[in-house]
Length: 355
Image (cartoon, rainbow, N blue to C red; front, side, top):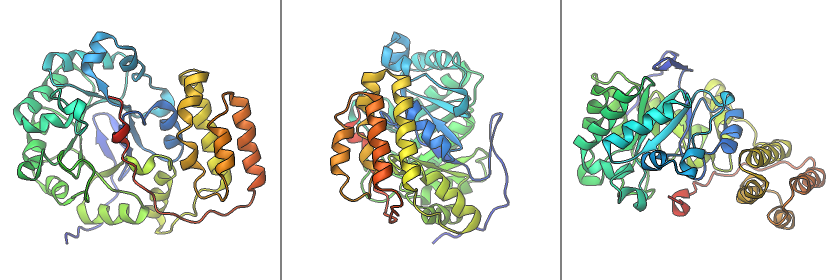
């Protein structure tokens, strides 16, 4: 087992962006990491967030869905916009389009395992062609003055875990941080994430850029253990934050004090429900915002006994005021209820990915 010493507290820097010691990043997740979701994660301690990934081809075609994903807000900063694609010219042009909305950085997705993306030679599909990955990255770096970062995986499969070579080559063409998911594309989300290779990248004396680890962080205890064992500069959290944005504050508190916070209270949960709902309606429109919020109530209210009747109301009502009334009723009926701590279930959101 690798054991590393506790490191002196230092700021983590990406270009001009200064992050606290051992920052917690919210992963870019398709159909999840929209502005309403990012807002509740930011409230709970996410230090750096990313948009859903955006197709470079879609941006160039001015596709409505791709353009909408460019929406970022000052209160989210620092915020990165993530792009993906397999064509150098398209990636360079999309980086210029992204720069116009003034994010704090541009991130390149070389890790998405979804078949529809991989088949286009993008996302994790690029893992099979490291020279192409280098050319795509170089094209983006040269096309923008913003810091460029990359999110990727260990390799395509067990026979091609090339992340150590990839890290050096991407650093050489100018990326300023690297986030590594501890699985291959072939694994998708099966098995356990392997952080040993992530640690080897971090230990490489040639690597000067921040290295963020990603994969299976679902508790404060695991976050601390992986921080000490693998020596990464920070952790990127994805699936564990779906329905549980409090994970950021819980990890931060545990790292600082060694003590676990109690589970979020009923008031915490109702407040997050309302904020997520109202932000969703404001960002999209009343119909779409209400409809898309329906998938979140079960996670936010998980643990309340006999909640099914109320949950059924929440997913059938169409007016925001009526939904607020039901949430207020839940707050009254369950006042004083103490939640038990439950393990976070890592949801495979890619199964419903709309890309």
